[in-house]
Structure formats: structure tokens, C-alpha cells
Length: 225
DNA sequence: TAAACGATTAGCT
DNA sequence: GCTAATCGTTTAT
Image 1 (cartoon, rainbow, N blue to C red):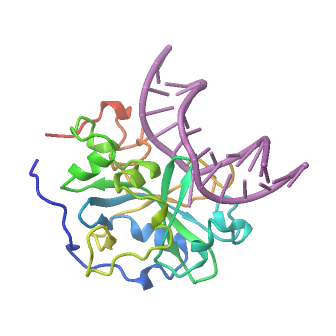
Image 2 (cartoon, rainbow, N blue to C red):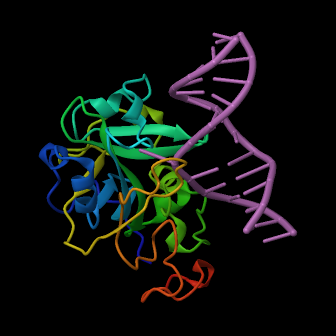
Image 3 (cartoon, chains in turn brown, yellow, red):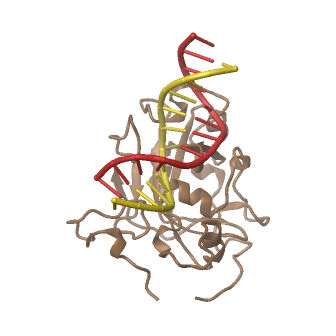
């Protein structure tokens, strides 16, 4: 592995606010394959996200209206909405659609790109002992790997003149996207609002046995090299 | 002011 | 496969 500092400027075109000014179920699949990066830290290619809709979706925080926690969801699109899950996990969401609606996309997993040293360190794996697949496979891991906290709630994404520490979203290559039901919900989990890069090794849940790409349990997978 | 719950994960067996 | 850990937010009293 080549050790070099994490980029402080994004490598390509940065997504603008207009990208997010659409319903979350439109934005979410368009995010798959895009590059999420925290300048000076690291990031990777998005492989798993979930959309949360303001109406007809009981799992959406905005479903019951504005509260102190969720008010950022009702603000301008393109902002960061973070909250704490189970008292310890930082969930990273991106606000979508028109202001006042309460729509967002939850970032659930990304495929880490080099350099991964800071991401690993944030995840408590400074020695690089764990497989690359679990650095950012799951929403709590995403927040931890990027070293996010509640102070991120309401912040804007970087505009490309990036300061160290900012979050930017960079245009990636176009990829195929698969739609599935969401994960970890007591209500609304049946809605087909989870979007993944099919067959990715970096999903929060390994592909099912029996699928064309599935070859068994995740534990058997290991990073090459 | 108190209690219940949760868009989860890690560490067991 | 199962369960403990852990605490901010919401809801009820």
C-alpha cells in the first residue's frame, strides 16, 4: 500500500445543491458510485444508501413533523443531517428535495479508496489488521470512519474550494444500481428504498448465498494483497 | 423529571 | 445465532 496524505481537494466535479433538490428516492440511486470524501481524512465510492420520504414513510424522522432533532431535514437540500442512533452511532444523512418537505438519504456504506490509513485509524484499526470490507460497511461505521459528530448537523457540503476537514461529494463513474428493502426498521422496512451497487464486497450485508455473485459467508472474504 | 425507544455494532457462543 | 453496550431524543406524567 502506498502511503500518501489524503487529498485536500476533490479530484473531479463536485455535486452542487441542485443535485439534491429532487425527491430522496430519485437522489439516492443517483448517489451510488459517487465519491464521498472528507478532505484531509479520506472516503470512498458510495455503494449503499437508503431514501427516507416525508410522506407515507413511518420510518422517516420527518414523518411526524418538525422536532428539534430533525429540523435540518426541513432545511435547504444538500445539507448534512446527522443524529445519534442507539446512543452511540452517528448516522450521516443528506437532505433532499424542496425546503420544508423533510426528505433525506442515509449513507450506509462506501468502498474505501486510498489512502485508507486515517479511516482505519478512526475505526480503531490503526494497524490495518481488519479486512478493508468492514471499514465503512454500515451507517455507524461510516460516521466513525469519517470521524463525524453532532456538530456536523446542518453543515453544507464542500464547494470544491475545500478546506481541510470538509465533506465533499464528487461525481463518480456511472454504475448499475439495484433496489432492495431497507434494513433495521420496525416500520416501513418493506418499502423498496435501499439502493446498492450489486455484488459489492463493501455492503453492510453480504450478498445472499445463491445469488449470481454470492459465494457464501462474509467471513471468508478477504482483501487481496 | 422520568421512562422508553432506537435508520446499530461488536463480541460472544 | 444471540445479546450487551450505550445515550440522545421523544413522549408521558
